[in-house]
Length: 104
Image 1 (cartoon, rainbow, N blue to C red):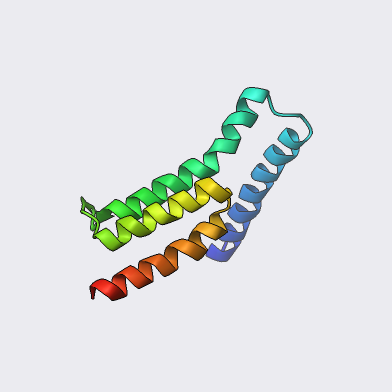
Image 2 (cartoon, rainbow, N blue to C red; image 1 turned 90 degrees about the horizontal axis):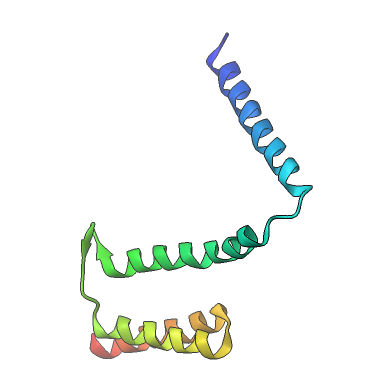
């Protein structure tokens, strides 16, 4: 038995276990409680990743320079008004670039 055989066998087994679980769950509707919670997983994950990347550096908390804070606020207001993340990026990044250029 070679190492490649073992790797391929484990990969096929892992794929088969996941496929069986997805096929079993896909046939039945999810309970309302789980469906509501499922909708919140994506925004919660994005918020956690964004907060970690924004407020920490090398595992320690850091204070933000004011151009970043203003750009975050501009992006937040844009999302609240339009409901579209693409608009927030379209408005927030140029705001960050402009404010960074002004302060540099």
